[in-house]
Image (tube, rainbow, N blue to C red; front, side, top):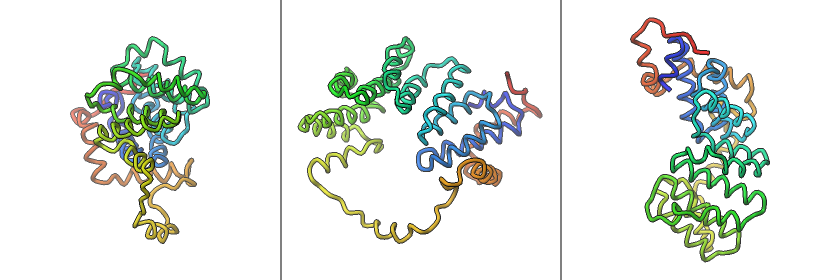
Length: 271
C-alpha cells in the first residue's frame, strides 16, 4: 500500500491513509462506519488499487455484493493479481448467482492461488452447492487433503467447521459433532462458533448475565455513525472525525506515509 500512496501528493496520501486505517480498524465490529470511511477514500483516490480493494471489502462486509464485486474487479484490473478471486466468487453467491460462483471455481485463475486461496475457493464452491440444494455435492467438495490433514493452518478451523455444518444439514449428527470438535480444537482465535454449536448439540443452554444491563441501556444512542445516517450526511460526519486524527490513527498512518516525508512533493497520481 505504501508504494501506491507514493503515487499521490503528500497531503492527499496522508488523508487517504487515515481513511484506510479507519476502514481496517472498524470493518469487523462497525462495518457500516468502515463503509463510510471507504467511500471517502474512494472519492479521494479511486485510481489506487488498495483503495478499491478496501472499498470492496467494506461493501462486502455490509452485504452490498454488487458494489463489492465492482470494486474487486477494478482492483484486479489494476494489479493483475488473482488473490481476490474467491471473494469475487462469493459476491456472485451473495447476488443470488451460485452457478456463476461454481463456474469461477473451475477457472484457470484458481490454479494460480496459494494454498489459502484454494481452500477459500473450495469453501465458496461448497457454499454455492448448498445454495443450489446440492448438499451431498457440497460435502464431497469439502473433502480434501487439507480437511484430512492433522496440520493446523489459519484456514483449518473454518474448513472443518464448514464440513461439520454440511454434515449436520444432511442429518449426519454423529459425524457433525466429531468435526465441530475438530474445528474447535483448531480454532485458536475464535473465528468460528464451534463451541456454541457443540453445546447446542449437547443440549447445553447459556444465560447471559449482562443481558439485563444491555436491555437497560438499549435506549442510549451508540457512538459513531449510525446505520440510519449512512449516505452523504454520514460520510460528512466521518470526514469530520478523520480530520480530528486521534493519536492511534496518527501512529498507524505514519508507517504508511513515512517515505513521503523525504520529499517536498510526491509524484502525481498515475493514470
